[in-house]
Image 1 (cartoon, rainbow, N blue to C red):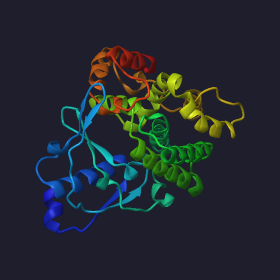
Image 2 (cartoon, one colour):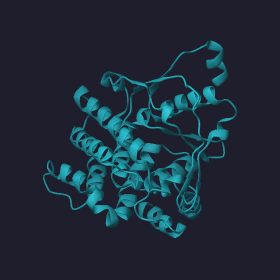
Image 3 (cartoon, one colour):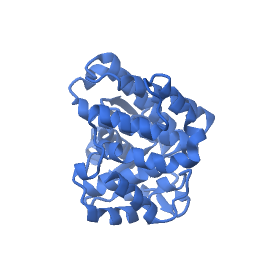
Length: 305
């Protein structure tokens, strides 16, 4: 694909769709600028907290992002590419985020509601991880809390049929992506990258199943960081939620969203190998609660199973 784009002489890339489309455009932009193989530009992680990001500074084709799901991938500086063996290569480069963004809820009108909700759970995870990441800042905090407010209001619309609700979800996803680009991802995304890629599952559905459990793991040490978001959702709640993980579970229940890995086809004997693989993921580096052993990850996977 990169050779076809180069031969065409493109001056920009247009990514219309969800997270996979956005990540494909990012991969093309990086590869066309830097050359070589995509694997030459991968980020690496050395436990417990060393992330090595190749320095890549050549001008890249600008990306015009037109999202139709709530992944928020158009806003992030990170992207992943799954190899044929199921291993997901992760990349980070500030230049790959969309240079121009067009949000038009009419373009998501043919997206199934279930898919849009699943992708919204990914967006919610972006905002929550940005709030407790050790790379957070006052700016990323403000953006993440506003994203949570928009998600909370939009998901009250059971049908998501109206342009207003879909537009709010797309805006929320973009804000959450911006916050995550500033603060960086943590344990939840490390788990989801491994499970979704190895098991060849929808990233959004895996986010839904994992989020309350990864969030609960971190809430004990990140309650203060998460409190502004909890206060925001409780302002609208009929019955206040004790924790944000309880709020996420309420969303799952109300909308019959994926809540168990077993529902998605994951087998019990896959959990231990998945937990070991998570220990190689860069998302562990900035998690607020150190993850020192694969047994901690396994406990989260078992709770989500």
